[in-house]
Image 1 (cartoon, rainbow, N blue to C red):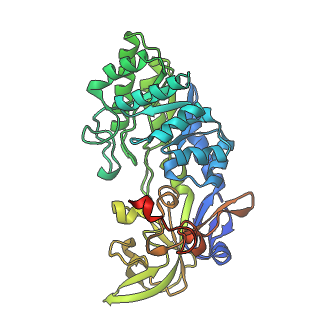
Image 2 (cartoon, rainbow, N blue to C red):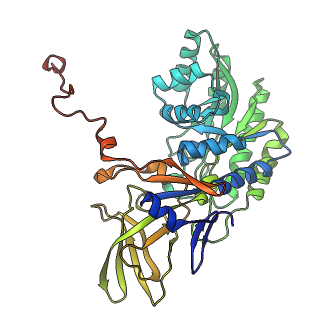
Image 3 (tube, rainbow, N blue to C red):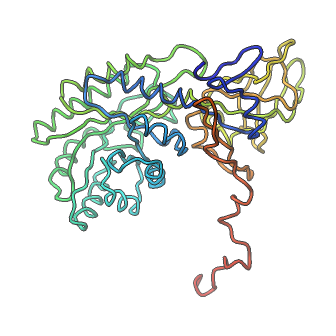
Length: 427
């Protein structure tokens, strides 16, 4: 069976027993299905067949190198949001022409490196950024490939924390200023304006904002064509949502048809930047119960060894993830608040869950944890980053070893190790 299966007798990933993985590598542990990653990428790529396009996977969702190597082999490009993500992509085997560089606050050093690398496009967020890229490129005697990110002032109908397309958000050039900014960019000697970019938010579960954004960008491209500006592509970002509670989600074919209905008449190549949709359902986070504390009645705290330092989404967005036992128990159900070990009340995994009361030592699986899980993990309370394994080909391999305390201290020289700053330098 492809993906994750939970039955009364076993829990597996692509046929590999999850309990075996937990014993071998310990917990907290991220477990990914290679086959599911490949299938979801190909499902979107196939849905866009018939029109020139490229799927640029959004590294911000999950940039573990082992996963990127799978996506590169499948044919994906990538969307990077930092110099670090660009470096990881290159280490994973992507070529500079496979990379688009997005981000609202690119540093001078990041822009210098991006221009030098000759990426497929730098998605510029402002007139000021375009000016900085132009200056860098002219100093090198080059022309940098750029696309202008526009802010279409469209509500993504998603969580406020992951919506990016309103005039109140920090992203992109306001649509009312965008035509002038693009004309100025096209006239700069150090810039080659190749596209227009828009991304209005993440976890979109209705097609209306997708349709409105695509139509707005396509119409804007027509205005630029009237100005004599010939683009190569339209980049419509990502944002396609997934189901975290098991309810039906948007069909990828309907999503693709909605985009193509707007873009096809322009004749321009379509770029998309999915992240969550590709990798979100392809992983679980395994965590061990370390304590069970009664609250009164049939309600209990179930304390586990993974919390907001391993999976931030529930604390940050009040996000919901299904939780399943790896070895189901029999008996009456109880109301459980599954919480993490950190010294924060917001350190929760899932509240008010009905399940057979686990016991200390039981392993639970937090589902749909492939996106914004590992990527947002932290060392809060000095928790080492968790290990990650990729299941595929009838076996599994470690794609990130568990961090150690020595790893945590490697950047912190002790007194006497040459880390003191001379007083003269502080004056």
